Length: 165
Ligand code: PNS
Image (cartoon, rainbow, N blue to C red; front, side, top):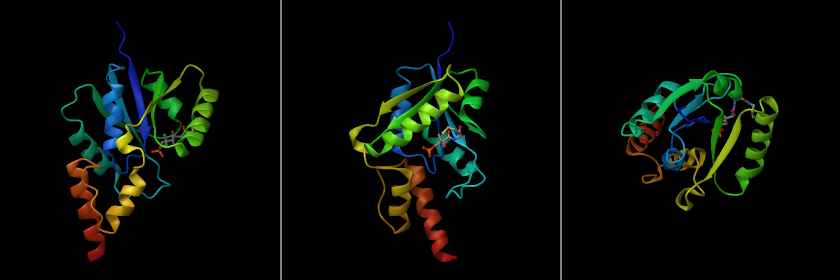
């Protein structure tokens, strides 16, 4: 029997509990989920790729059917390279829809054999994102419960470091 793998792409800067909820729910549909970090040299992330990998590894360590990888260039090329045909994305509030729709249509134009699959984010994470979490954490806001404990700790370290430099 062939293994059904879903590729879950993004920046994951950093991974949130909303992302992890999508991974866990996707694992009830797919045999395997690969979290794929886009390695984009033009974007200035808060966490390096190595830091993001470390935080994700810790967050999925109890889940043998989830793994992590990085990719460059076109997502559809990477998905094909991995022998998969599913792109997994989470959908939050309505504002996500237009961007996701554009991206899915572009990916479909680039490769019709690859399907985009969307899972609705749990209501608990409807209005959270890595960006808003980083913003709150940067001003000392408490983001515990929205991110895994290690991410919370690393956010705290990052922003305390930057205050002291
Ligand atoms: O974390 P994000 O911002 O939601 O992730 C966006 C991502 C990485 C999935 C998207 O930018 C992407 O797939 N980039 C790779 C380049 C590509 O294939 N572009 C064409 C389709 S839009």
